[in-house]
Image 1: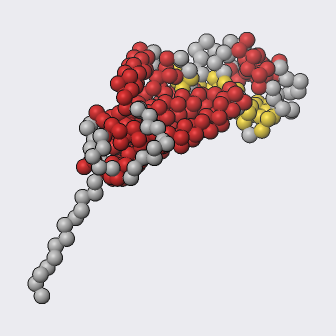
Image 2 (image 1 turned 135 degrees about the vertical axis):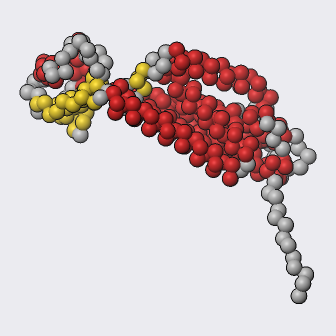
Image 3 (image 1 turned 90 degrees about the vertical axis):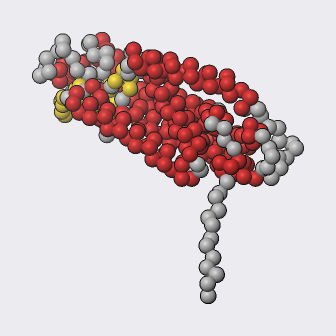
Length: 311
């Protein structure tokens, strides 16, 4: 296979040391922040109060949030529940307010910004034990996903490619999680779901690049490894950038118009897909160079066939 003369091969691997330094810097910052500041866990993990209320007309969520903020419920999360007339209020555990009276306090605030009477549907307290179980199950789900990916890539490509792909995914998860720690953004179940989605998205991009690298190595002889990798990334670049661009368009629309409840989810996906696109181009491929990948690594070993000469 020969490269068309009109196609310019971009020297991605020539900048791999700069890219690796950039990645290591982000990872160190993320890990340091996670170790010192931790994550701003939401009510899904910490426990707290769930208050469901019903309005006679559509509820004004912005007015409700403003009123709750003035009434010492600054951490309250308000969202529609089922319809525009029903709302769900999430409040983290409070020591300064009696558990038995928190529902009445919230109901008073809701009535103060409503033209009609607000009906309280339920008040529930979610203990921190439930949050701990959700956190542990989410972490296990992430580890199982990474383990399954390692096996899949090893079977489809080869071990060096699998190591590069897994390290690229770990790179994406650490930096995305670290972003939430550095900026102290709330980390809840929707953010965890977004990070799992980032793993799938980033893996898809990485597999496309690795597949092209494998085919190019098999097709070209006596071509330097660095040129083969640069050629493969260049050939898949337009597909990678267009996929990321169209996906980010949707995510920015969700971030801007989706409301406060979905901000964390959209933010995690925006950061994750941005980092995932970068890692598909640089991290996995650079790690292949570091592990001295060669054409022999991608050749299919032919099985010897035993021929019985006896009649």
